[in-house]
Image (cartoon, rainbow, N blue to C red):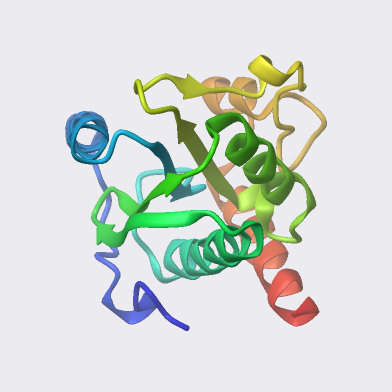
Length: 182
């Protein structure tokens, strides 16, 4: 099932100013969702190194993550209050408001990120009804690892340790392996 059609991706570079504005809009949307539905909020975005955030590759990654997240929601029996996915030049975003304990949802999302063959390609944030983002640190879990080396991914991203083309190739390989395993 295609949620964000890959062929409709913006396929254009996004500058820092536009990216920061998009993050601010995402935070505003999160607060609006929590005001309307004071429940656990799950926000899915795909990994997207470099300036091209909305591409056929990132949309395929997003779609697989959205399907996995919705399947987990059904498997756990969590009541969905609202779900919405949209493709933006700054990348795909999926919002899912659930009647479920935020800590339990976060544990399941961490399991998806760690155990699903494509899970490393997703960023799944979980916010409680008060808007607090639950982190891996809250559960005493280590930071996520880089796709190309064993360092924490955040450190490699911040220092731009790896060439974007190598990261994109690793992402494509991971996605294709995950799709083949289905």
